[in-house]
Image (cartoon, rainbow, N blue to C red; front, side, top):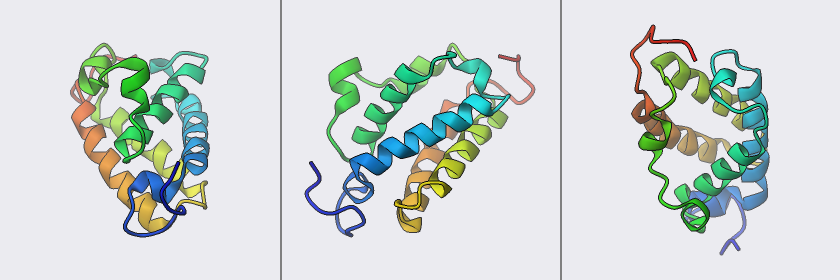
Length: 137
């Protein structure tokens, strides 16, 4: 449970965004991923579990309870993503989907959206494991 109201400064990004807004963001994000021809082939047709894992990961990543760790173990992000050809273009597409989802989630303030996108941009760069023009999914 957040220690303060969403949007209140001086708290974790998770507390500022709030559990409900974060869940809506993840739903909007995966709706975009499912429609992106560069990303959709990398994901299962049913994104339910994928979205649950993303929500659990983001909760802990943003300063909330460590749900991912409790349910699935250490995230090991890069290792878990190595089987998938993640090119710079796909990392950019992933970020574009997140940017669009953030824009469609007005309850997340502009400042919090920028902070989240900056943090996820660093993660996306770290996930690239295939050079540009690498094998298709």
